[in-house]
Image 1 (cartoon, rainbow, N blue to C red):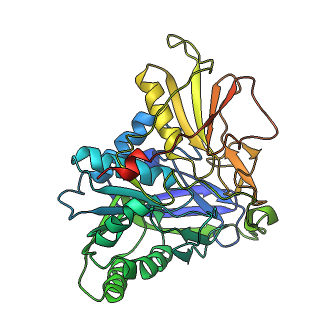
Image 2 (image 1 turned 90 degrees about the vertical axis):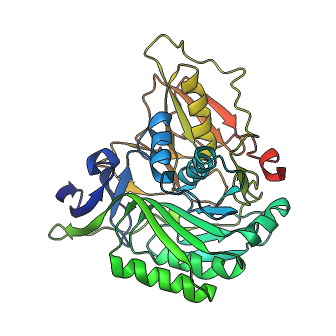
Amino acid sequence: MDHRFPIPGGTLQIETTAELVPLQRLLAFAARANPRRPYLFVSRVLGRHIPCTPARMRETYRLLVEDLVDLPGPVWTIAMAETATGLGGGIAETLAQRWQREDVVFQHSTRAPLAIAPMLEFSEAHSHAPGHLLYPPADPLRNRFRSARTLVIIDDELSTGATVENLLTGVIPLMPALRRLCMVNLVDWLASPRRAQIADTAAAVAGRPLTVSWHALLTGSFAFVPEHGFHSGSLPGNVTAAATPAAPARDDLGRRGVLMPAEGLAVTHHGIELPARDTDASIAAIGVGECALPSFLHAEALAAEGYRVTVQCTSRSPVKPGGAIAESLACEDPYHQGVGYYLHNPPADQATWLVVSERGAGGPTNAYPLRLHRITAAPLGPQGVSRT
């Protein structure tokens, strides 16, 4: 099916080959302040740039794990920072719950340095923040990593496959027991020859045959047609810079692995003034940067108690106003690397804002609403890490 979507600076032409979820329920579109890629696919189900209910997010995870049955274990999942950190955790947890598994581990790449050396580094060439770090698993999980027979790579969008290929080239040699590889995405734009090329690369790096499968809610292809005289401009300097932070990031939220489901998470709201359940008042759970899974879990717990709640996250992604992005607020840099963060499509001031972060920091710097509360994310381990 053919689609055309105007965005600031041009038009996105999209041809879909399969829509498990209809395109316009799944995606919206905007323009990036990024000459490497001046367009942006804005997910409606991710809970990042567009507010989304936790129920819809959980249903998305269920759709994506339905075919991930009878995977040889242990199963190791790796999600791409920063956009897919919540998506990856939600998929890993749902995979463990749906198929009653106790051998699923969630990990995500990061742009925030830890106190130890990374296991590998790989690049996302088109991104505003190209460098990814992948850290060695926490000590109790190292044997699971080495013995993992299935690797699940999770991202919101698969466009050229270059980033995935870079990751696979580095990580597969570290996984000697690997036999199965699953690519899980909201949207997959790859053509069949490119998929075959990535599968061949993975097998060549492994030095043995691998069973490779591809799972997405929508597949197809796209082209960006710029307007006459279009110029995307340059990236903001405070987006591309990344100094070493004064304090290392936390390692108990997914950067070194968490055994799923995340049973160790205690979701509490003591001391926070929440709106009455029987009103139209809403709650916005706002994850800060890579701290996306805890904001989803908080929101899901509140929804189960009867509150009206949505999820969204701050981001390093510089987006131009227009299209799917109505407004953006400047935010604190939660990792103190000197880079810019934004909250796109901020909730209304009358909503109660719950800002969920790693250290109680991060959030809009120029428009604090009256009802804003900060929550420091509880560890997703050690209970999950130490389980046998």
